[in-house]
Image 1: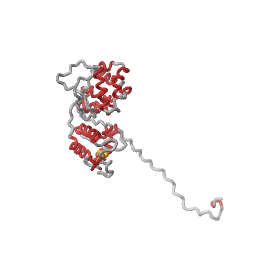
Image 2: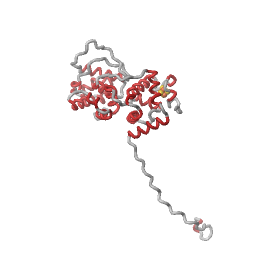
Image 3: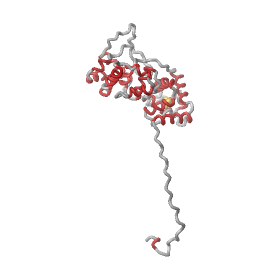
Image 4: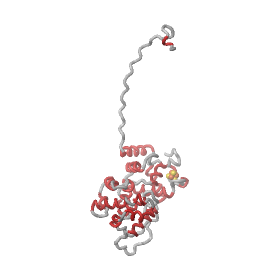
Length: 298
Ligand code: SF4
């Protein structure tokens, strides 16, 4: 039996009345930040906590591998198709598929006299490169039956996924101005140009940024698996950021004239030194400020 039920014995005298509970104040809800605000906040935080990190990385990589200077790689439509072919595949496989397109749908354009037939290395590209030959005949590629096109690019891998994206992209270009051309994008503001390309089915922000950066030097920062891995290990980008978030953060962190250099330098570093498995930290010029190498690095 509870002591409170025994009258006059163990019941405690009534104390002062408990103060009436006040209504909890309503806490103002935090507004969710949009991606650009999140990116700008990260850039400010990095600059305050690890000042000069971006310049350190770019300068050290330039000392190790040379400072990349923008130069055109391929014509913009070839750049777009090659980037579609390289999605989730090694660059060398994308080259095989691109060369298969050239062979199956040859251009009627004359081959320039004395043009080298050996592959020319492409900056920021991991394959052997491509010879300076005219691009495939895009109208034949667009008109090709899907099954046939799929078979042509099959040696490059993931053909079922990639084949429909190629005529869709070519169709979008032709519908825009009647020809297979992307030159009009060079005059647009960078994000508008990127969004125009990314609206084509199968073209993401990264593909659009690659095409614009390499074709016209448009200041955008494509983030592929190498760029993301190296950036997250150093601590330039938070560990859980996805490529699109990292892309927005880089736009907030870099000056326009740094984007080509940053993209090519980080990709090269990822391929040569900061491998996915067993990065060569011992010989890495970034080790003094890399959080993977030293979690307390400043
Ligand atoms: S120190 Fe190691 S993990 Fe850091 S960037 Fe260099 S190779 Fe990559």
